[in-house]
Length: 255
Ligand code: ZN
Ligand code: FE
Image 1 (cartoon, rainbow, N blue to C red):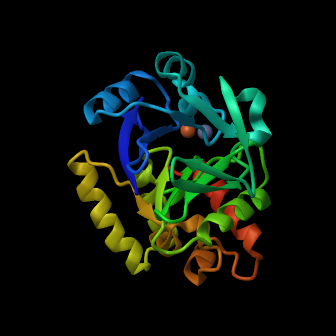
Image 2 (spheres, rainbow, N blue to C red):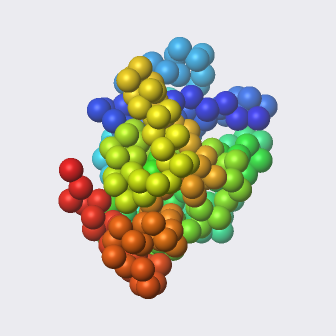
């Protein structure tokens, strides 16, 4: 069984401690910086064995080298971006299975935010780490890929079981939700989720994890088939990638 602990980093990043209780192996996912991760390890009485990176951006790998030096943990990252992952020891990609002690993760390649971006799906524990590809009610910017690639990456994640918990790279949920409401003001699931999110953020609490089921109902980037969203974009007859691309473009300039 996995225990998962959120570790807030920088201004709006989350790293995650992932603890396989059967074997006492402990990974950190996407450590922006070492200090809060070391403090969390100490608070939970855990010793780090692995560092997992979803992609190379500094706010996901900035703590790699210091954590590796301090704890001897091994760095696991995307094969497609091996040269940009600080301290990488093990490369993984689509179709691989990677094990944290007794917990198995299936790896997906989910490029478009960056050319090498992966997800770790712990199927038995119903948890997926999505980095900057899928956010709660949002998706990452397309820095190194096309809308079609991002749509394909998100579709892999959206196809996971509805009760899969989604652990993403940032606390962007409130602003993502405001954008979502602008496109689907009549979406009841979205309205009720926003009430929860507003309450949590007012108390300065995290909105993570989400679930795949909730994302399917409320994330505009998974909803290019929604008649209301299409009407908002005046794209009633466009294909799904075109609707997705326009949704992403609108988000880039949304205030
Ligand atoms: Zn990023
Ligand atoms: Fe990021």
